[in-house]
Figure 1 (cartoon, rainbow, N blue to C red):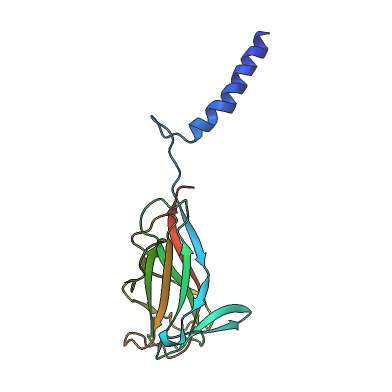
Figure 2 (figure 1 turned 180 degrees about the horizontal axis):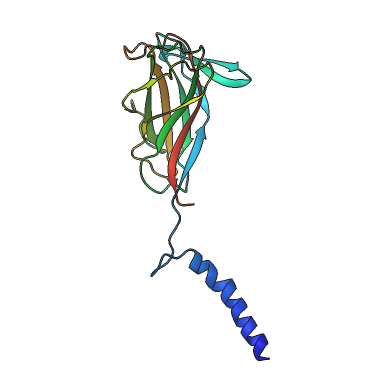
Length: 194
């Protein structure tokens, strides 16, 4: 009988104590893991007046074409996830270029503008992040996908919507790439409590 009682006691401890211990962080317990998570945003074209890209299929993948010499971009809207905890989420764009790099020093300039909104908020011009100049890797082949960070989003609150615009500032003096580029995805990395 004593052996059965000891076994029952150990089984009870295993069921009830270990989950508490697994989530504890010393006195007080209850700590949550902090991890980085990524949201991929659905992309939509800008209006023609604002510099529309051309949606097409390139190498069996949907892409949005931004021409050289003119500002063209895309829109993306997403909801800040419920597991968002704190900090400023990071905006990234994945893109590629139509032709091979010829070995000279050439750049592409991108910029992200965003608004964080909830029901009842007034829409405005948005917050423009600093334009980012990206060096096209020398002698890189066409259709190589690059990932570029375009700054962060301030004022993020779980449950609010972010309205995001990403533009290739091809008319900027810093954009020296004379070929087409393609937007593939826009992604947001944020700190999660899960």
